[in-house]
Image: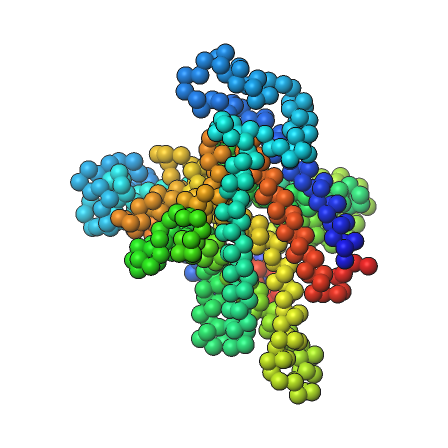
Length: 307
Length: 287
């Protein structure tokens, strides 16, 4: 198992390298620079700025420098917030995004599985239809539609929850963003769980388990649920990537000071080093979390465990 | 027993017509498309005309302001269907870009096979693990947000699944006798690809294309929502939703109307995709 994880980690390094390289060159071939947005900038001042930020060197040298500093954990200075480094900005935003993302993933996973299990056990009942209708809406409707609608309903009409802001992660403030972000994951997992539960409920070994007189809860928890988890685990990878793109929208809508909002602001300000830094953070997270999902999969299903 | 012989396509059409949700979706999308074409041309209020007496007015029968007006007094009916025009156009054009790249790449990788083919798919695997939307954001930031570039950028990252589907199909079709006989007849590789391979992978491709259109509409709306897509005075559903989200306290119809049209469109395309899958792949139907 450890061997497998290490090998996967080794594959992750070149992937990350490709991402960094692609992102770096995409950004540097841009027509126009980050300082074009400063009004009435003196040409000599512009030249000095370019020099100060190493932008006057040949592209390959810049790339080499960037990689070298990256290997030392330095993401460079921010181009829009002159006195800040990218690492500082990310360190500020990451805890917010992590809290938001993790809470949403946990909620999506557990609530989604619960809904799926209930729907499968009460197949074709009113509960089943309600759960599946909500799941269909959750999968089909993008976050940037559901989030404002949820705010409209729970924040404005009912007045139960604050409309926006982070307030140091205070409980009432994170409910709406977390629910809005969790909804697509929750819906997807509910559908998959229901489907795979129904499949394993009809399996021969479940009939055997019942025939030998196991109590129903034991049949469900031990023989139905475990194989039914497999498709859910393999869905986690795409769900994580989805939650990350979703959190960009959620942070922007609710005004949360996370790296998703910093990414959008960086894009609007042409803050190249910030965008590059955040893409690297996102890509690393996606790769690591996918790896984690694969390891859990191997743990649950001995057949795919590599020798 | 002699039933009138029907071609594969006639058969598929007949099956598709029996799929109620898909047929209803076709009619709804037809209506939305027709309105998207007609309204910006013929509606009495244009999309950027200010109605001073009706600033942020709720939907009303006066002055044809059926969907109300936005903060600047601009007619939402006109803006919604102008947005429909942009969103649908970008959805379709980006899908075409992805279709051309994906089909060509997948067919070549599958037909060529061997190490080069594997290598081509390994590239797809690596690109697959990248966060595609972040790359679209980088591309849009770097190259500016012109209409043309937005759809090139989205199309350029959304072709991967198509390439996989087409490659898988090509691998099996390549072994068929008619392809072998074409090879034996000495036809050139491009001719075999265009005449024998691609026409026969078209079924699953059509199904995936109908599912890719709503995905690309979402991507465009996502960009426009963040302010990185279509710019004023032009508009798209994503931009309207973003402006509506800013005014939910005072004018909820600005959010609800474009959101409703977007959601209806997404569902319609998904139903049409389901209908086409059932129609084109009868084996799958019995599930």
